[in-house]
Amino acid sequence: MRNPNLRELRRLSGLTTREVSQLSRQIAIETSIPSYALSCGWLARLENHQTVPNVYNLTSLSVIYGVPIRQLLPCYGINASALSSKQLSIRTPRTMPLQDQELSHTKPPLFAPFANRPQKTTLMPVPACAPGRFSSLHSECGHSRVTYGRIGADDFTLYPLVLPGSIVQIARDCKSPERALWWHEIERPIYFFELRDGYAYGWCELKDGILTVVSHPLSSCQARCFAYPADIQITGRIVALTMFLSPPQPQLPRTQELRSYSR
Image 1 (cartoon, one colour):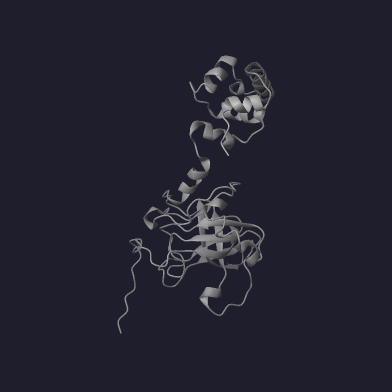
Image 2 (spheres, rainbow, N blue to C red):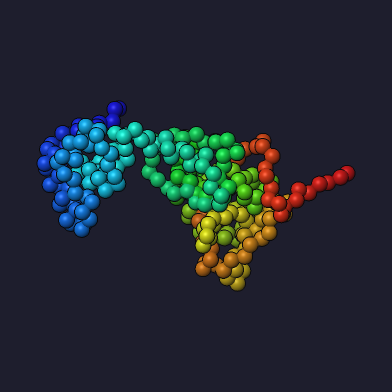
């Protein structure tokens, strides 16, 4: 379906430019923010593509026409759905959470080139790894509240069990470490954490108010201890992941050394 332009939206609302201007002034008065006010002349230039709106203008038009701001963006050649997929190719240096957003029609690629992975672990918008890929796992994993995260390209906490650049599904209803029996490392619960200055993931141990983020013994990463819950929060338990089985050789930090074994 074609996106209507601003003139069509105004006419669908049954408003004249003068009425739109009056309503915008009302918004400006009620919010005490003059930037929400739109003049008739400016509206005419806007509808004729002779000027570009700012965030205040778009907010006023969104309220007056009764449509989400994102529905106004295509009028200016901005495809928000396509742009949201770029999160997978933007290199961020730290592990971070990805914000949940209601972008149900977004279908960005699940995988981006490994070299373009963010450096740090982060959260992801749900559409960045769903729909049609992880969304069907909601009922299968038994968790109704889930979000998604991306393991940073520099995050080797559980390497080689979990590779940098992996996409993980996080069950938000698991907010505390489970006292579960596990016989193999693959069964040990993995958690996603929010820190004061970023995000992290890994196994964990909680004792006497100290939460220890435990790394894989082959990763050469040190365990990290935090005061819980003052300095660390549990976002949830990682219940599913997608990762590259044969990525390019990862660049380990200089402080880490690959172990070599001789027979």
